Length: 468
Image (tube, rainbow, N blue to C red; front, side, top):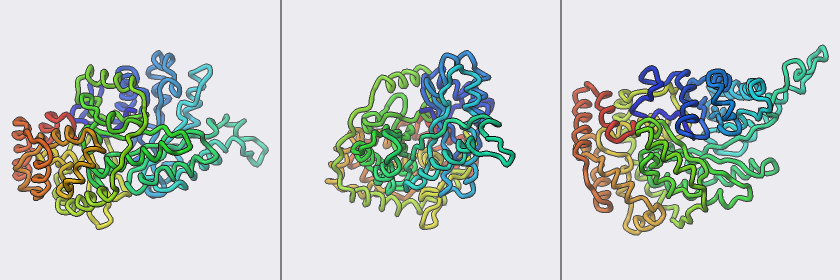
């Protein structure tokens, strides 16, 4: 699944400026289908402006391609919508987004002789209970598609007047972004599916749990959640949201650690850095490899959940000490998409009144000064914990070698977490990249002088091949 996450340093050839606008994202959908051979494009209404005429524009702009690659069958557009339980200011945008589904079906009906619904599923973020899914499912069925059955005062049936509102129902994909909800995802998904679906897709986040609780807790929580989903009576097709750095999932075209760590996952996200910060041939080959690999049983993880609690407690204790610095420096991270403020969970508006930017910006700031956020809180990892965690996360040593290769000791002047660095170096190999030491040193000097910070962040981002 291609996504619109703004984690790329380089812009693609079809973009007109330093960030994507609405027309660029239409081109992007065509590009990932036609060139990268990715089967699905997330269309993100949650947290950003987006074009709700995407189906009409794709069919009218690229008719030859889409006659041979049917939207809804061969390729998919899957909207991510606001969750009105959390994003109250965007609640009515949900209704507007759902209304585009029957309209898009009308465009497809005109274009194809025997159309399938071009959009038949939506992704709902920040899910914490089954009622959030049920309400959206019922709202679409009864008040969007259900309008067809209404009769006006003069006796006119709405479906006869405006045309039928189809499809009659849609699939609702829960996106779990908070560790407590992830550890209950089987219960929540099972309650929603009961009596309605024999199978469903369930989406697990990796970035936001890491921002909220730390790298290792987020990784372990995702593994435990996948085990629980596998044991459900409902046939679950898991999706996992992974970015390039280990903090956000360790999924780039050259090191797809996520394939090893999450073997039962059906769908992995190819975010913007995956698509644009690597040579086209490398990215395309990685997609081919991914498509050739099928899902397997989840890894049997036997880890004491108190490890998650201890590591996340240490992480959460440390993060407030750097929040002001991250927020101030984050203003200089280049904006690749026109995103709005993402609200709701601990990572963005913390219960202890500490605010942080989005996970991509957080990673960009921390990596650009040479203090990768995977290090935060790792001092709480005891020797026995280390053995258990390495058994549960087979690629942990490889991931941490990558992390430490991007560490710059100068960053300790800004981030006073010497205990974390000391513990990481006791546990994992440390071989610094000389070019990256120079680049992150420039970022630190730029921050000190308050001059050229954005350029320095881009320079270091090009070396690591992701923005954040």
